[in-house]
Image (cartoon, rainbow, N blue to C red; front, top):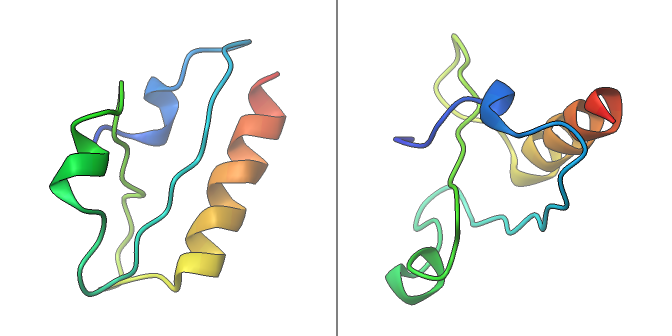
Length: 64
């Protein structure tokens, strides 16, 4: 929940999407190997990981 916003993803950049579960997220070992961590800012408490992944992939497709 403390990641950067989706619009911080650079246009025309290569990305890998790694999604964690709602309760535990990703292991620190995995997070330490990432370049940038993002969060989806919403007015609701949480998103299903499938929905979150879909939002991110749609956003990435739109910026290319």
